[in-house]
Image 1 (cartoon, rainbow, N blue to C red):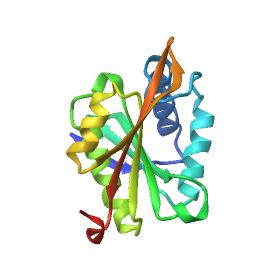
Image 2: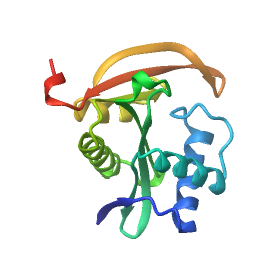
Image 3: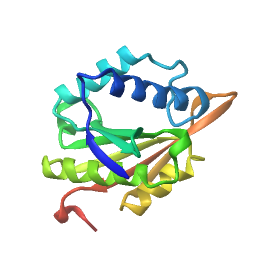
Image 4: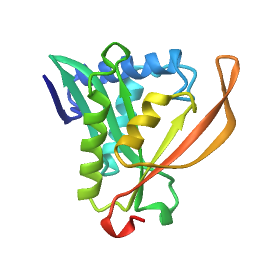
Length: 173
């Protein structure tokens, strides 16, 4: 059974699971442009910084295992961007295609809407990351643009896909 909950900063379990999940994506995928996997302490520091900023950090438990995590954070740090958040979602590579990412993103959208944010941006590493792109489209994100070849990982240039979701009813087309 899939359940969602808030990140628990007081347990090593969440820290280690997040570090393991993210580390795999750093070392084997192009969703993240990092090239060295951060350890559990560094991931905890990052999640605390997100939480301290008033943003949600979610954990997905699937049949007793941490299957993924997601968070919203500032899209940019300049004041005028204050109403816009950026989402990040990482699912354990062995637990993909089980609805984990969809559940996390759906709940993340709900929470940032309730918090009063205006827009959610998806900044997706690699235009070949069709799973993430399709997930975002399914939940209402629109394609905004592609920055071609701005990253370099695993011996090739990598694009970044920008997608946007208006969070208020008065902002739809």
